[in-house]
Length: 80
Image (cartoon, rainbow, N blue to C red; front, side, top):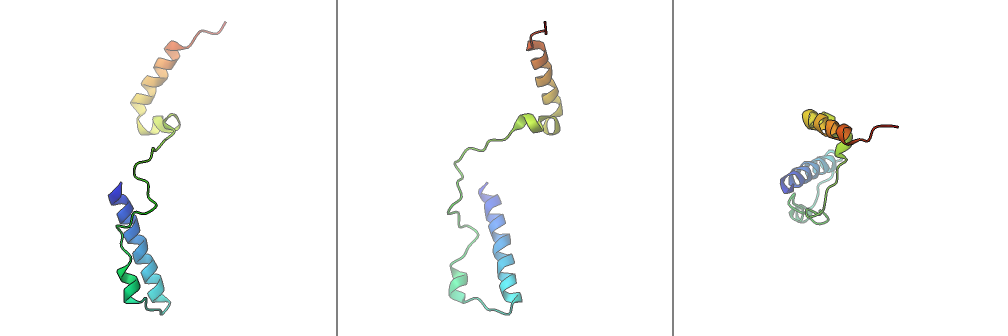
């Protein structure tokens, strides 16, 4: 996860710098020294990620989704 965040940060830092330079501005060297893609402030890497697997199970794991559906059907009570 950290690598993905750093890659995203690096890409967007570069895009921001290119935009500044394209506008004819030169960012101060002191400002450039203070930015880095390794800055993780505000990024919670210890949180819990929740995904609605039921919604995507058939696309992600077709055989597992079918097996789960079969189990549910076997457990279902017959309609009266």
